[in-house]
Image (tube, rainbow, N blue to C red):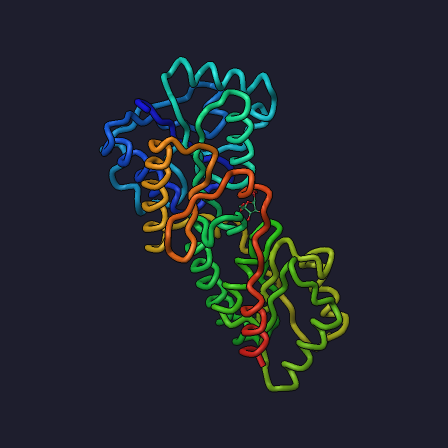
Length: 324
Ligand code: F6P
């Protein structure tokens, strides 16, 4: 290849900039030109490209967000949109594409590859850690640290007022952030979509905690959890059954996606960027770069998109034991 494109797509995550930097510099290392594509697939359709050199990615390894911007493009879901994108790609001389994003972004890449036989390589970037084929996605570790930090602060006020706090965290349909950050922050209960605890067991458990002398509690709930209609409904249910408790809800929201990437995410992003470009140069296409047992590994894009990640049952047990 003489020219490779790189884009970030879907929800941003800390570590995306470090991955862009690694892709750009690996291209330069192998004397390949690199084109930055702005605003994901929308920028691909509009030809919003800029040539990137090792110096254009100076001082971004430590920055959250993405310097290439991100978007969820509706137009790219249409045949016409993808045709326009291919015309732009041809005109620019781009011969392969690195997509940093989540499963929606990979599906776009796969369709583009099928229709135009265009080489595509994925790098998993999402705080949710919900991509099959990698133990860790970019931004997950940073998000965990952000959530733990936020809950530590909530704990200060919860214990000062003897209150029960529901803290809702992101994660889309999975509970990885909730389970890991919940254990890390010492939450009493952790509610995740993968394991339905039921409202009554939750109330029983909170009552038991009270009896055991706990005057305040933190319940971490994943946004995709279905124990109640939503976190406010759950709060009302607990209040009905435990009117003596003062209950508050804190929805952490998009602050979980921002901030300086952790060292873990920066190193992971650097490794993934190098592996993505070198795999393309070896002629591999339609794969996602992942990490398994601390080794870089490739996973076919369709498996990465269709496969489901699993919750670690050992962690569930650990959480039960350490909150006694
Ligand atoms: O996939 C990352 C994520 O932050 C999810 O945790 C969340 O459900 C979703 O994106 C929010 O999307 P948006 O930024 O479009 O509101």
